Length: 418
Image (cartoon, rainbow, N blue to C red; front, side, top):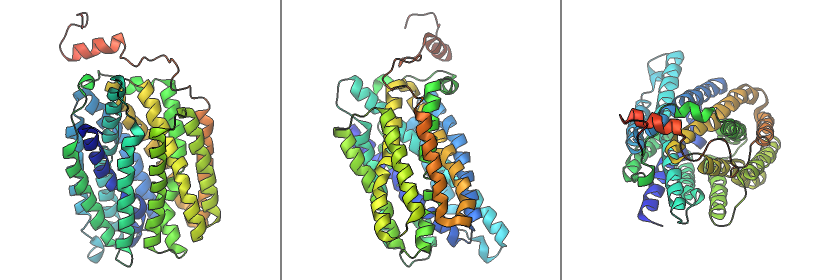
């Protein structure tokens, strides 16, 4: 690996270390602060939707101003400060309603501030892969993504062991600490490759959304990834209720990410399946996974089913990344990635969490049956997605109109020869 690859890997690891705390344990912390299942669902749903609506504008601004690294650093530092505010616990001197509003507001703000960092780093990595492949060098997104998954694995596993028998407030300590680590990790982000430093022109946000095939990709991904909503919001809570300790719960989350790492390792070296086939595989794995979780909660079943994370999450994510890599121009990649994060990683899971809250309150693990429906719908949408290597209407290079708009933005004559 090159020095730039190592720096990308370290930034990937730092930014995903935060998710090693928030994904498995945020629900437990909210429950420890006295929130009900409905309130937890409200916090997580609203957070997911608001950050989803906001993130694409950050990505579009980064592409237009070529300010990817600086925006990563600013948002990570701001998120650290907002997370630290949550150490104030209003329950001791204010009513339960005011304490809930406080937790709701600053959990929302901290997450909204942090989440643009992840697709920005993702986009920088994808642009670097495009550049390396354009120059004939061997490079693949899956190989770099292992750094992120490994960081999640180590942090989730260590946190599970550390938190056993401790007050849920220690989750907040770890959350704040990992956000600070993420802010530090953005320092090592390399400059974008020289051939991709040109800035995107105005209107790129809407031009991407006007591409039918991209919208199909976003929706299919949203439904399959969204099917994880109940798992993310209530998985740890349910497993603790049925008698599993936090150390074991941490192992379960770590095992799922280990499956993800194994998948990315194999995919980077041997797996050449088309993105559409990867989407189908992800949907099938999700359907089987949520069906088992809705039915069984013994340790052996949970250990077995976590390996399906390699399909339900990793195969779906890699399919989206490879499709964007082939069909989106380098100067638009970060905007496309943040749109994917918005629709695929925001609106889909947000809707699933909103559905899961009332269902989990009434049926507990039965809520996972609804998640199988999300995954099946995602597979259905993927049927209409063209192949990633098909010649579609939009070229990998910007159109003449886009180049003219870019030159006008830069004060150049659009008719001048470039």
